[in-house]
View (cartoon, rainbow, N blue to C red):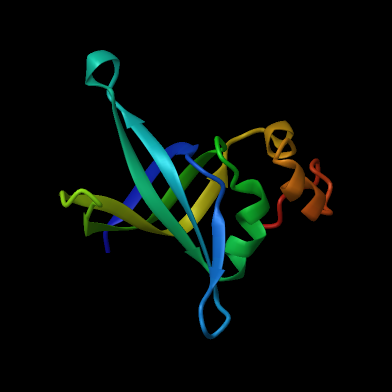
Length: 126
């Protein structure tokens, strides 16, 4: 198994979809920065969490949130709309650590905030 450990910021709010059997798949992308100055590089990692854990994390996985991820790494090949071939790192997440402050997580968009009934100062149950 290839395990990749990294930290970064979410590039968009997470998205939760359900399989035909009703299993949840929560996906999000994380910008992983390396190097500095003229040598700085950003790699986008496509992450997915299977099951109820992903559903429980979804209200906290908002654009800009800082996370630490550990999971199984695979390299997916794709063809872009303009016909160029490329590769993308995909990670099946085993462990997520929320690095953003509770105050940041409580400032989600109005629709997410109204949908969430929990207290933003409450400990996250993961």
